[in-house]
Amino acid sequence: MQVLITGSNGFIGSFLVEKCLERDYNVRCLVRQTSDLTWLKDLDIEYFYGELLHPESLVKAVKNVDLVFHLGGVTKAKDPQDYFNGNCQATVNLLDACLKYGPQHQKFVYVSSQAAGGPSLSGQPRTELDVPHPISLYGRSKLEAEKAVIEHGQYRPVTIIRPPSVYGPRDKDIFVMFKNVQKGIFPVPGFGRQRLSMIHVFDLVEGLLLASGSEKGNGEIFYMSGDEEYTLMKIGKCMAASLDKYFLPLFVPFLLLDAVSWINIFFSKIKDKPALLNRDKVREMKQDSWLCSNLKANKELGFQPNMTIENGFKQTVAWYKEKSWF
Image 1 (cartoon, rainbow, N blue to C red):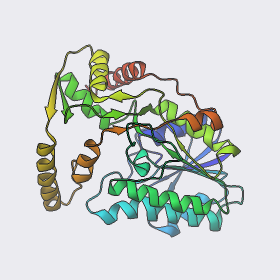
Image 2: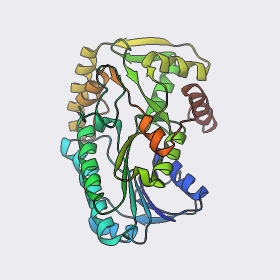
Image 3: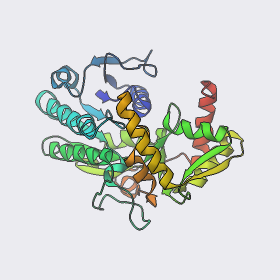
Image 4: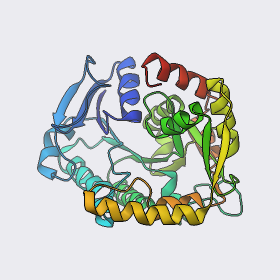
């Protein structure tokens, strides 16, 4: 099995590479010349240097490939068009290359995001039957990319996966939350009532491999999450338990977050860098729930998450400590 993985040097992608190698797949990784290859070094893989926004650089990478996992994309951007370039146009370019130069049987698995579906309505977990209503530029750009993948499905087998927040070893975003708890403080937007779905990276990678090998998944979209739902306060308590620490919840009013987001945007333009906290992020924080159901993935793909948040956090903290991140 010849596999191509974009976003292979990232948090999720690097674990997917390792799992594919365990299955004795021949793995190609599309990377930039400037990519940080920390998690890929010493692995028996083939590098293809290219850019998703440079179609000509994708031709060799997709040739003779049986399976494409597309994880590459943009989560932070300086302006709105960057989201659509990095997520939608980049996906269109890769799909075009696959159609023109890839074999007829080639399968395309696209890792989208819960953000493409939007927040859950009336506190009920979102399902694949719900009409998408993304509330962020990131979510809208991922949804547009999904539409291109579905269109590609007229010619080749495709599957779309929408994970919620992903955590585990190597993750830098949730690590910031762990660092705050380590210091005894846990910032909570609003009153901490927001309910969330999450998934451990190991469970997600297993789900991606299930989707890649299932004909039932062809032309389908799947939410892929853990079985439980969490409040921000429960997440904080579980983090504290995994660190053997006590913490003080710091409730941050949304008005303050709005003000900080405007300030961040102002300085991001001066520094010519994406704002870490922007209006979209605050809008997402204000939603009552970001829940999704994995029932369809369970029934049609046999997906079953194994990692509870308690065990997942303990394992993640152990890895952080082993690597001296704390």
